[in-house]
Length: 400
Image (tube, rainbow, N blue to C red; front, top):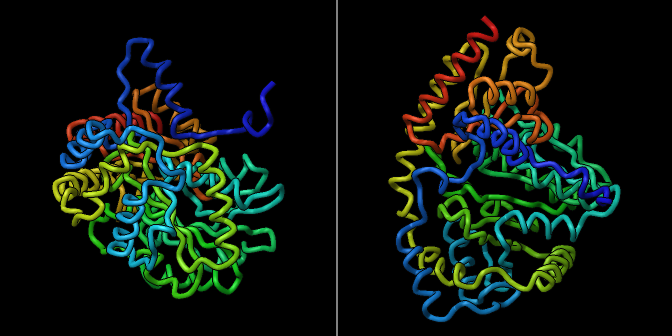
C-alpha cells in the first residue's frame, strides 16, 4: 500500500500527458503546448556547450564527483551569479543539484515539519506546492495581481505571514504567468522577509529570458537580508535534459548555515550530479550570454503572436508576458458558464478531446490560478497559429 504522502502527489503539467496519450492511441495527433521544454521544439543547447560535453566525456570526466558539486563548476557559478545577479558569493556558497526541482526537494526537506507553512506565489510552480505537502507542510499562497501584470500583492503577502511560515518564495521571472517583478516590488519583499525573520527564497531560473525590460535579481537588492537563490542550465542555457542546477546562499546567518548543512546532507545521500555536464557548462557560464540573441528574437515573435491571438478570442483574455515562454490566459466567467465547464481542468480536458490541443489547467499552479490555463509558446509560429485557430474554433462553438 502506498504511503499517504506519495498517493496525494500531483503535478498537473505532466499528469495531463497521460490523457493526451489516450487521445493519440485513437489515431489523432495532439498539439502539445503544456511542457516548458525548449528542446522539444526547435531550440537546442549552445553549440559550444555541446562540444564541451563531448570533450569532457572523452577527457575522462565520467566519475563520481563531489557531492556539493565540482569545484571549478561552483567557481564558475559564483562568477556567473556575481555578473548576472550581483550576488556576493564564493564557490563555497554554492550547492549543485539535479535541476532546480531537486533543490526544491532539498529545501523543503530541510525546513518543513508537520504543520509548517510555506508562503508561495499564487499562481506559481507546482513542485513547491507538492514538496511542501510531501513533507507535512501547508502551502499558503499570496496573491499576484493579474490586472497589474501579475505583480505580487505585498499587502496580501504580509497578511499571510504567520508564526508557522518557514520560508517566503519569489519566482521571478514567474512560471506560469511570465511576469517579471520590478526593483521596488522586490525591495518591499526583501524588507518583509527581514522584518519577520523569514527565510527568503528566490527562484530565478528564467533570468536570461526577459523581453522588453531588464531583469533585476533579488540578490542585488537584499542588502543584509539572508537569501537562498535557485538557478540552473534548463532554461537560460536551453539544456533541460542535462538536469544541472544550483543553490546559492547570500548573507548566510546561523539559520541559513543550518539549512545549507541540511541540504548538504541530502546531496551526500544522492552521491552527486552528472560530472561531465558540470564540466561542459563551465566555459559558457564564464561567457557573455550572447548564445541567446537569436533564441530571444524567435521567442519574442511567438510571445507577441500568442498575446495577440489569445486576446482576439471571444471569452479569453491574457496579460502580456515579460519573460520566459509562458502565457496564462483567463477564461472569462461568462464563458465558463456558457461552456458548461465547472472548473478550468474540465475546460482543458474538453479542449484536448475536442480539438487535440494540450495546455495546462491554471488551478494546477495553486492559489489564484482558477479559471485560467497555461500555454507554452515554444512551438514554431505555424504550429502556434494552428493551436490558436483550434482554440478559437473551440470557443466559438462552445459559447456563441
